[in-house]
Length: 336
Image (cartoon, one colour):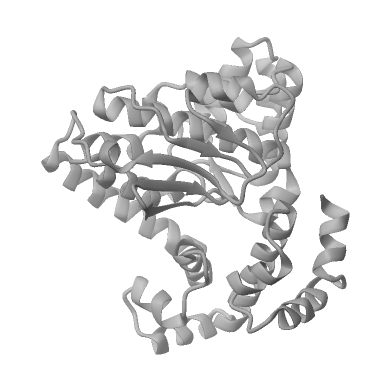
């Protein structure tokens, strides 16, 4: 899990304006502020987590992420925002946000799904990251949600409100700040962290659309994404593809191969060359998702077993005991 240097720079600058020591925060990342403008520079999750935790501590702002997302200029997201603003419709822009989210933050994939009369744009932080720093995850989600909503308003130059916004984590003491900034109903302790938009608003044209520029930007983004994936190894690419295809059940190996434009045989061969097997990767991801679902508390063991494609609850319980040495209910009791 890595995070773009520019994003860390934004956190440092904002926190410093709120009273935090810029020197202390730069000491955490071990770089000068000017160095953080390097587009290729990334930091591991441990550095990012410590920075966010220290920024909250020094500012005393329990809503640091929300306020950061509302403060940032849209140019802070760089290439992704340029693509979004050049798209033809809001729907197309949302699809590009999902496709290229990895260029901004690898640990927070987005998914987009059309439901009855609305679109759901959801965020899915890696379970391993949530275990490392729930504080950093919450502030990142809050900031991403606030920033995405501002993008939505900019694309149409209309102040459309979402139908609702949901978060998986418990309701904070002063939740009114969320409703003030989002201007819509906000619910906590829900099965998904998501923004729900009226399908009529998603069909709106983007006022800054530029199809020629869009083609150039998308080509460039695809090359950057391919380079990023190549550098990570094929197993990581397959893991990310599986995560992106969860709807909410896990994809088949054929669906993953199709998504990567290769045959199943080629997928298996390339994994084997790196010392991996598809079944092992799938098992690891099932474990991560199982932990995520259990911490959420809204789903029963039977429902989780179904979402993870187990034949029955007993099979899931056996697997979970093999992973953790505990039953799902024991794990949930210790972590809620």
